[in-house]
Amino acid sequence: MTAALWTLDHTIGQIHFDASTLSLDLSQPSTGMSFSIADSSLENRRLLQVRGISDEESKLSPAPYVRGTDLIASYDGTAHSHLSTQMYWRAMDRQRAFGVELIVSVQTSLLDYRQPFYIQSTGLKNTRPLECEQSGKEIHNAALGSLATEIEYLEIVHPTDFCSSTIKNNSTEWQIIDHRLEKGVIRRARMQAWWIRGDNVLNTANALYDEFSSSEPPLTV
Image 1 (cartoon, rainbow, N blue to C red):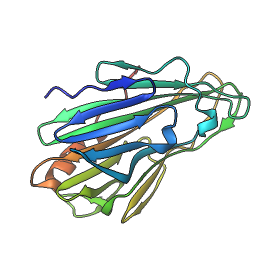
Image 2: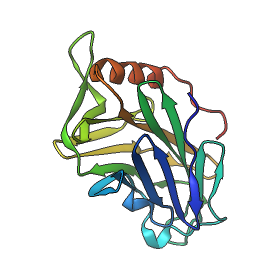
Image 3: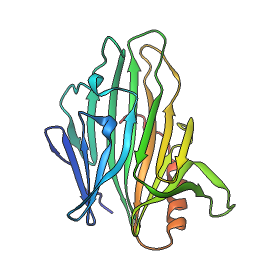
């Protein structure tokens, strides 16, 4: 299926799918994406909040832009953070789900530097680790919950980027970067968020998990 495309108005990115809308202020990545259904805003749902650069350090340079199915923003390093960060929000569509893949790419100007990155979502419901359909065991780098009645929501951190997780009934927090950064070395981490359509949610969630887990990281983004 052809994914929906982002629209961009100054620093506000939006994308529409089914009867839902995601909105994101690229000048404040720590606030994450808001989610609304038709004309009803679910204000307490804040998805994929990026914790690693403060809002004061989130100077956009150059201006954000849309390329194909990607919404792209770059952030200058500062004397305080010594980081340069680029983020991609990639729209994806499958027969039974709509998704956004978040790619975080960081590098430092210092010879040796450590800056953990966390991704947090709040305002969720009935959230728990994804259950493997075959073994019945919990998958600790994926969580399944809901955003509203009949809207099932899945988050997955790629296994090679997973550091740790805190999964609660109403929130998730993923640590995706915990490496020491070296000057000139780019570190990337990926995770996905999915809005699952229709019945057989666990089967769909497991299929999406398997697809993402077996995917190779992009050589360039």
